[in-house]
Image 1: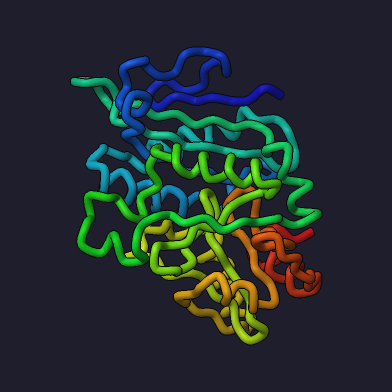
Image 2: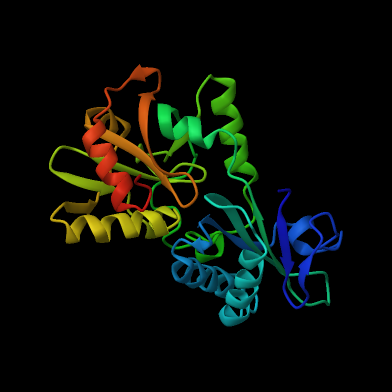
Length: 279
């Protein structure tokens, strides 16, 4: 299956058909927002949460967003995807061309090829400096902290640097030494007593829908959870560290900056189950 594409205001189109103009601000300036979701046996995980976050992102960018129209477009695209099991879904909204209307489309395709291996073997991670303070976004809302914009060039450059260094992914660290997030994932760790994740807000990092669902379910099951400012040393001291994302799920870190980490299979399996990735 090559993929499914549905365009806002149009509906399903051929996967290879043009869907965006060359002068669209999403292409020329990365001016737009998106959501990445997992489709599993015909159902998108947490679609309501993804649409709510996209609504917030669009509002921050001052781009019109009709959540009900997007829900209908997603349903049309999902109905056209015939494959069982998992697939990757992207919702993408741009400002459009100068003087024109916003552009939007939904695409569905296979999971990235590396995900099954990474889930099975765990992740080798390096840390890299982001170059900004942990509170850099507090007084600068125009920096769009916490907004899932299309401007992911730096994120992708960080992941390429990880590959150059023989790793799978990156954890970004602030100039003052605070653990932030991965380019496409949030950071979660377990210290033997509670699950932790990094604080949002002034740090500018994205609030994760999968991390939030994991913590809600973990709390209901009796786990203690916290948002905690942490250093890389705190991650080294943790019993388990995960990168958590909507499509890849929670995947445990088996090496951090070249230092091997012991796996804790029973805790890892429970965290995956709570996040909806068990079995």
